[in-house]
Length: 153
Image (cartoon, rainbow, N blue to C red; front, side, top):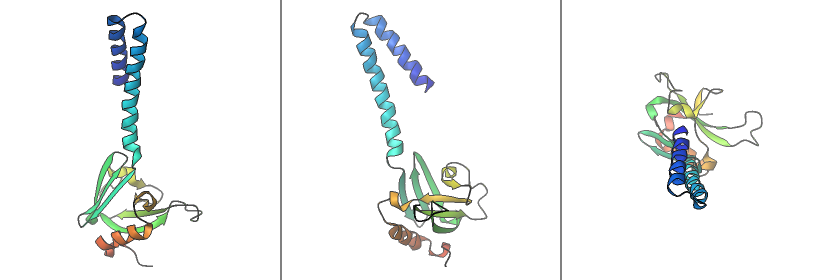
């Protein structure tokens, strides 16, 4: 961010030096506006679609707020559907959670760490409400690729 501010300041100084007169402030505002638009577009691209979920025989591929994460099925001990609200499930949202296998040395290491929930010691893989499918459809997809990893009631 410091580099961007420094670059804008340098550009403003050059514009003032070259143009001078009453036109310089308008050009400086235009350059600042373009810089702000560039930052806004970048932020929008990161936050626009928080989840891109793809399940395959190799594992879970997830794009989450600018991070690309791969969780192989071998690194997952079990998965299940839970709720974001531990006290009042009626008001929470469904989430798919995956617990790491004992062989995973550092489950909180990046880039997987952005999915880690310390309170449950698991990865919060996705919120079905933020995908194209319902909770039942997401669960069916998980059961297709990893039926042996879901605990039975």
